[in-house]
Length: 190
Image (cartoon, rainbow, N blue to C red; front, side, top):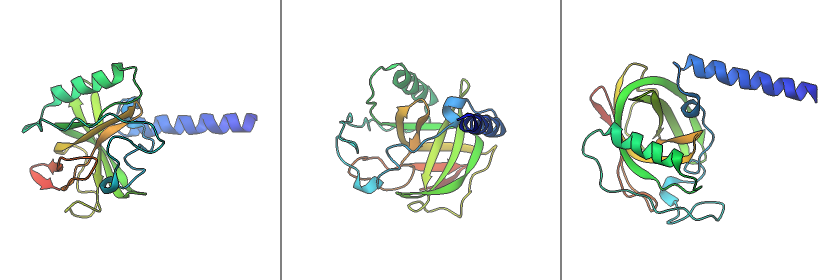
């Protein structure tokens, strides 16, 4: 029993060290657990619900912001965090800022993904999820710490520790009608 407690403390300590090494990302935004979007193929998503049988609000996909609007994103984030409801609708977001950390690519059930964090101001960073199997881009990583990024995609909020912007590639699906992209230092990847 004591050995298990010690092991948990070591793992939690390692998590804190990793978060600090990632450039001071706020812990709520640095941690990630598999979110519902990685658990199913994005092109085969279900309309109006997701795995587990509970209903999900319809995504809010319009209007599509023509330019970066970090203020809108911060307001949507604040609304999601203030809501006592378990179900948060996905929203279209167009954010921009400096890349503060890049993670290794990872294969999930829905394919190969690359991850990086963008500082959107006011001490907030957001995780960007890029579906590398669907994007026309060079081998990962094609983004580095310090780069300027402009991202259009789907903001998901499962909880404070599982949120980000995905669907940053070209194409749409049953569960999401907006094509996304990532622009790094002026070079656009879809």
